[in-house]
Length: 458
Image 1 (cartoon, helix red, strand yellow):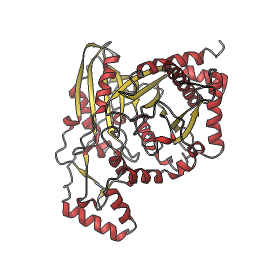
Image 2: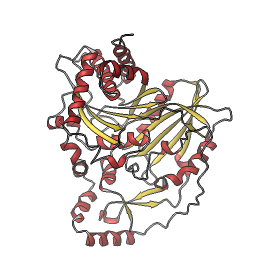
Image 3: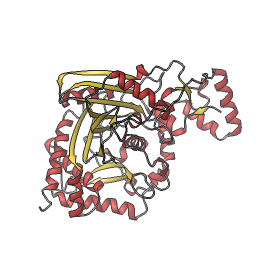
Image 4: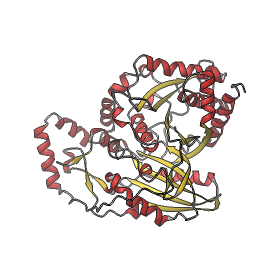
């Protein structure tokens, strides 16, 4: 039987348009080792690890007449050097130049005639650093044997794990006649899917959205705040195809201290920090902010417990509250209310996504966010705890890792947060026209951390 895309994976192909490419990304910054790290080494590393993620040698092929969902087939002309590319900043390259490059790379859609991923080696960074920028389509990152590409190249030691001996030979690509015959056979076996396949074949965006929401129905029905539309916000506007990217940094111990003194969780503290930053940003724009002003975040979050997975919530952030501790208590209360009312969906809806590294978990959070109407939230925040030990790629130590979460239609800002090796890293992906001041917001995130830390007695 053909390796057919699931209804959810196919929906991400149908939802994609010129302003909303459906790829998730990451920016990993490395210290160049004494032994060196160049393009050929990165290509060799990825080539060695592709057997761990076979989907990355496959492309999407549509069934003639759109009689069924597309299928995954081996790319007969697979060329790893097409997908692994290099770029360089003028030395000494600054962080700002790197962020501008990331924004340009994330603005470009992936080539649907080839496997849906790209990796860029960025050289020329100041202080003996290099960066690896990844792009992977959300249709690829299903969470079951198909992790995000940035995950498979990392090791827990400067000595890479032994390569997996694997000779890859592409399976023959099925003909159009065979694809039609398989679709007809499946329709006979499962006649209830005929209508669904026909609906998918129209590539109608509304139908695709309904399909995705249906698959996440358990999640949607579990969220109390989803019963009402999100408040108006300058973040919900028509967006362009172009992006801006900015970052912020904090120390994980700082937010752990906040948690210890004021209660709640590190996730609560992260949301409270972002609440403070968004409040300051709104005021800087001259927006009307009253005591009752809120912004709604859709927050798919990793859960680290006996049923580890991804839980997603809608949270109304109290941006009208001037006191940082009160903001934190509001957020903690909202998150606690979700959990105590049984509204977490990690156990039943998303538990099968457990155990994956941060790049993959951010991709799964982005998939969940893309499933909902823009009327339900103002901003997406994916917060994924990462390993608290150094990771390496071909001997190069990773010193920072920033997620790049895609934008949904009419959504001007997504924020990805990852903790790694004692640091907390915020990646802000924004529409170029609507968020010309995204770097200002990033600076306000760091200021909000300082404000919250100022409430902790020495």
